[in-house]
Length: 376
Image (cartoon, rainbow, N blue to C red; front, side, top):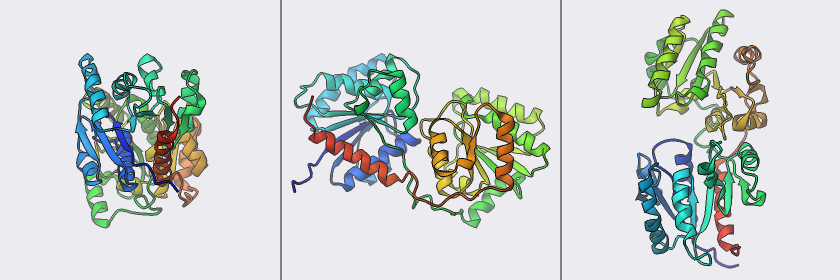
């Protein structure tokens, strides 16, 4: 059997701070190193860089995500970089880096240039700027929802170029039935004393208009009127541009007399613990999510989870926990379903659903196969 070709793979993204794209980049870099390949990442940097280096990856601090005209000056420099480092695969994970990578790649010799891969991580606004994410020789869609979006909005994308590779969760990191230690629990309830002895409903995610915070406030209000001992937790921070919206939410909570029934946690690094402590985790995004990793994490921990029946969250719930599917735009029915899940929740099945290993293997197999495929 021929020896496996050692690849140099360059992943590009705006920064290595926090988030699903960043975590996926890190996981792929680690898997590449484990298979004996070379893992390069180019971004503006961030708090995940030490983890990348510890895993054996290499980081190059370039402002490839900056939305300004000057960023185009990086095109020629990147072309030199690709030649110098003998890059075999370029994997662009975001729109500005994808434009820079594609312009550099397009100007290289088609017979010897690297292979070009993109991942469509989100359901972006449909325009020429976003179209770049469908220009890869292979286009990874993170769910069937994303694949359908690509084929619907960019019908000239060749269907055989698109490969659905679902995001995944490491079952060892999210074991079914796991609970945080008593010391953490004590500290948590000291911070949120109103939640003690209550049914905890958690809405994780950044504070933005699309995440359904107003629906959560309405649900808590109705559950209280029904006499259920509930406490709502909005678990996520608000960026500088979303402070006014956060104030609006806080005002709404006050005006409905729910200050003791809904808490705002701000940005947290212990979301896994909070999910594990919850009686019900919610996903109430009014626009479909491309995947819904937090929904999957909660379910893998064995926590009942409910979300609107669309997008990636709908896909995950249909596969693992159909009892948690909520009808979008029908708050009365959603309220009845949530009340039911709080009073007599069906058990969440314990299974290796959407395993991280599959995501890693499928992505690396795609790289290796593409590297061997004759160029068109």
